[in-house]
Amino acid sequence: MTRFMPLLLLVAPLAACATPQSAPAAPVIPMANRNDCGALQYQSLVGKPVSSPGVPVWGRRIYSDSTVVTDLVSSRLNIAIDENGIITSVSCG
Image 1 (cartoon, helix red, strand yellow):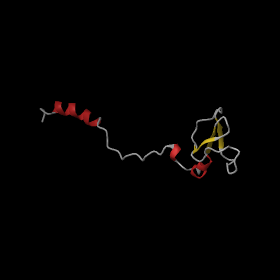
Image 2 (image 1 turned 45 degrees about the vertical axis):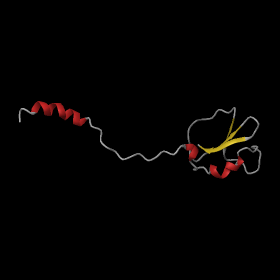
Image 3 (image 1 turned 120 degrees about the vertical axis):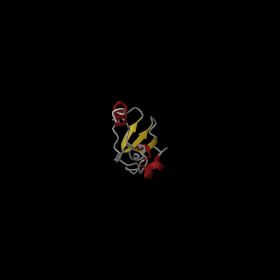
Image 4 (image 1 turned 60 degrees about the vertical axis):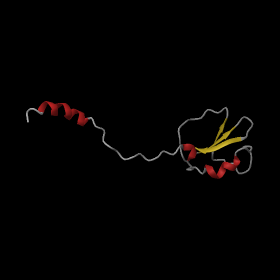
């Protein structure tokens, strides 16, 4: 038994470093693909002027020269507008 003691002292610390198996993480859905804010129902507005009827007034309007906070709020509707006043995208975030 004493012959194996040095071997045991070498192997024991290695066993402590082994990484335990964990459950696979849930898939992360990119914010652009989520519909928490209802953006899918407004996709028909892309390419139309921001003054068109049906453009929600409660959405965050992001103009091409705007500075916006980059915090992601999945329930917030973002309406991107180019320099000509045309809606270029509607997304959540």
